[in-house]
Length: 339
Image (cartoon, rainbow, N blue to C red; front, side):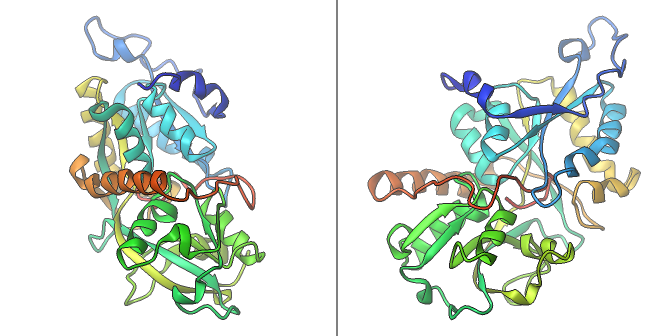
């Protein structure tokens, strides 16, 4: 653990909720049982930025996991990307949901003490998603070139699709994002980015999209969710560039926990589509999905992208982090939810 990580957690607003504190599961643990060393399972999740109560709808999943593992399960809701990262990196929680960029950050801090083990896999076998450059449909912007000198909204420094991945891909096709755009800032979340774009605070924003390809079009993403909730119309926006696929957001566990615990978690997730498919909907996972095994190798490219981006920023002009432009928040905590 890096020095000061644990002390920084005090200010990260990682809030305990849905703890099931009255649950006496695990109270009578046989001597020598690995459960005696854990006593409870602590998991970090994220509240959905477009539905703040979503994490609290995970109670059926908590009950399912408690039954499978045989210990009380406590959820910790992080208010931002860094809260999730530091809670797991410090060992304050045992496992958590996060994007590839967040896992890369943890990997840099504690290495093999954290491991990605599962991602959601869509019915067609897809285990990835895309980053999209979104503009207003009534704007004159129809390509990356049209946005030279304009304002760009990122999601978060630790967001894979809203920062890390598209920045490196822009460089690969000849655009330096630190000098090409006139001004850049962080919005704090994918939905916040779309809201800021709609309000004219940015000329373009980078967000996640999935449920399709650049050739076929997409069916899910932050602006799709907001349109479904009646907050805006899809016709108000246009995608001018997209890039991917990015490996889906993994479930990451602390490897210094008992192997029996890790195996039970892996098995419990794998059986959800068969034991209780309704849980997938509670977890913001598409119908017909299941889970696929992953490991550090799956995210090696993202780990390398993060290191390269840090090197680029240290050698050039760093992006201005101005805080949440359109309000705080975070994306939904499903194991396949893009970040």
